[in-house]
Amino acid sequence: MPIPAELQKAWDNAIELTENEEPEQALDVLRSAWPLAENKAQESKTLRYAADANTEFGRIDEPNQKRHWQKAHKDYTKALAFDPKNKETRRRLNKLASMMDEKAVSLGLGFQIFDEGNPTPLGLFAMLASLVLVLVSFKVVADLLTEEDPNPIVVFEVTYSVDGQEMKGEIEIELYQSDAPLHVESFVSHVENFRYDFTEFHRIIGDFMIQGGDIENKQGRGGYSAHYYGWCDGQEIPLDQCSLEDWSIPYEHENGLKHTAGAIAAAHGGLNTDGSQFYIVPDDGQATHLDWEEGKDCSQQSCHTVFGYVISGMEHVNAMSEVPTDANNAPVESVRLLMAHLMA
Image (cartoon, rainbow, N blue to C red; front, top):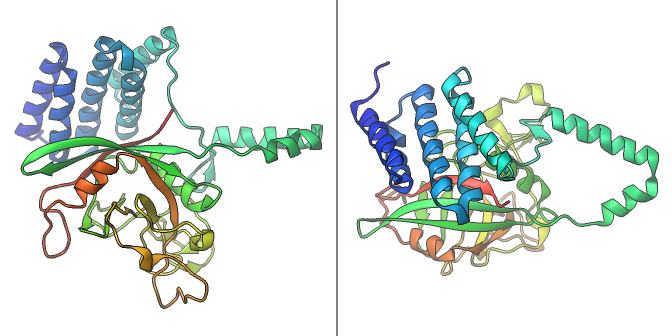
């Protein structure tokens, strides 16, 4: 398939900007060019050039070197996922890994026990290690279980327009894993597997919420849970009778978390149909009607699971909630979630 002329032009421009020590401008060009890619190979190459730019960014911006290089490593890894046989991408990834090792910069990769319902090699090792701990000392295990892990924090890199001017920002969200363990586990897994990158906030209603997270169609018609929790589009059935796109999360809305300003909650199309889509409540958002309360029949009225809160970047949530929309509450100009990652 021929490369679109505008995409090739963007690549050439990004390469030149990176070579001229202007990586930030190169990244801007590549973000704008992302929708022009027509297949996985072109997406892979776009990500590789973004990784090149972040590698250079880390070289010239030493105070933030760790953050730039971790982003570069993530982009190279994702580029290889799209095009695993690309030797040039692998060569550049290995070179960056050597640079990071020399400077004692961690790769910034999350420990993942499951991938789409199946244990990873690290996950199997963790299970075996846990079993050994149980056999060796019940007391040690009991002590470990009483220690509460800190809540994970996810960072959204977003872009939107205000009066025709492109705005960029970061939104930090603390996830309450003890209150909504399944929702947080699924959300974090999607983040670690880059599924939220380059998605859209497809539905925005002023004084209410901003909604995104469609990892399938980008426009609000799809999105599944990261693991199989026994629920298929709201029904309890065996895994072998459910296709991936119908994997869903059972409700956890009785956890006491409310739809106050900054709340992030699971969007759904009915009880126990939560998937990857989510919404965030702005400062002036009125969403308390979605809270669960004693006596409320959630099979007849909407009850949504809140699983975290924004701790930084509410100014961007508020601004995004005020962008112009059409009759279907879709933004007139794209409001994008460029990248999502766990805070190191």
